[in-house]
Figure 1 (tube, one colour):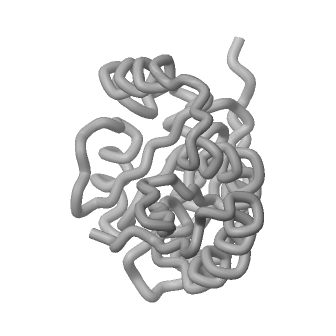
Figure 2 (cartoon, rainbow, N blue to C red):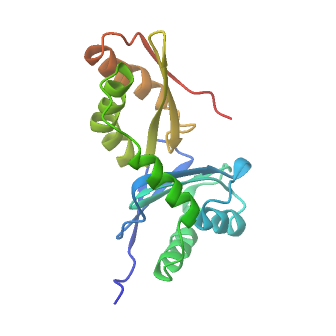
Length: 194
């Protein structure tokens, strides 16, 4: 028997994003991030949200939460209850969050990862251990993109994408941590948004 789905709302530092916490695991050990403008079709959940709510600009899913970004000036109170009820119905019916092909590709990618003792490996480990838990609690995700000539490039996803305070987090928090722990790091920058 399925437990009744409970969804709790949590504000994020980004005023255009809202975190919807669910009492079940949606994506164990993986993330899904999409923008309406570049929707890939890899997530039936994102597709259905974009179809139902024209004001949704982004959908981010990780572990037990969905972060939804809006493209309107309207306040969240105008939308949050309708979205919460829709998500509740969606998860109660056990509809797919992502496609099987996307999940298989991600699992294969994760299985091919080995322990990395390089500078990049140290950076990724620090991000995973110290940065991800804090950022996830705010409905976001920060992904390592590259390390080149002392510059670490990160991708801001979920509520971090477009968040007014993400630059402060990036420069004061993450850059400070990485410079202390990995002397080769000179600067941390965000990947340019598409």
